[in-house]
Image (cartoon, rainbow, N blue to C red):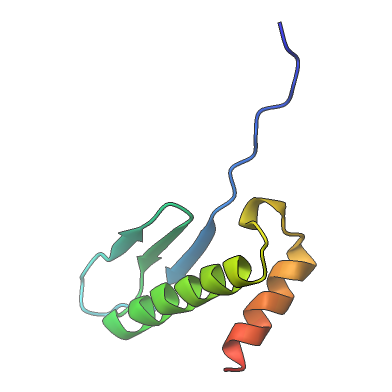
Amino acid sequence: MSSSAPKKKVQLLGVGFDAEDGHIRITQAEKYNVLMGSHESHEFMVQLIEKIEREIEHRGLVLDELSPDQLIKITESVLLY
């Protein structure tokens, strides 16, 4: 039997707390989930996470292997666009 550790699963998560219309919004993808929020904030989070994913891929990196500092720098670079 192999005693290797199970592979970690890394996902991005966006949660909005500004929904006042009673709608429950959930967007699920392979590497992220966006929950709740107003229509505007939910869509903003989905678009932001998709831009982050594209930037990670553009840099030839993999989300599962990024350090928190690397993810912060990528997120900051995407937000500066």
